[in-house]
Length: 69
Image (cartoon, rainbow, N blue to C red; front, side, top):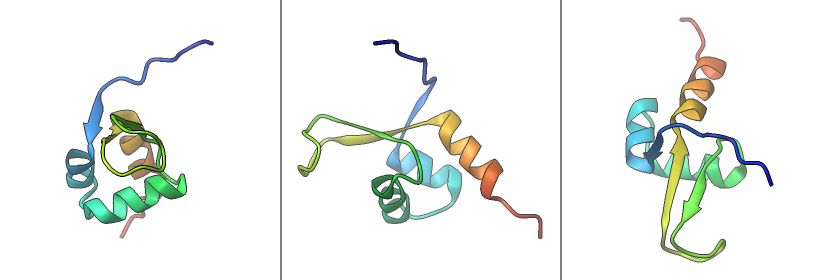
């Protein structure tokens, strides 16, 4: 299995602050698969652990979804 580098990982709080959204909104988007993330520290489907977001994914999402006012 080939792995690819993900760069810096942001916590939910850090990523939400960078996007200027709530942590709940961000977590819901990650659970829906709209924003890439990885959960560590507990099995999938179980509570607990920590969700981390690749910084490049957050920046990419912002550039794809920001509209000029």
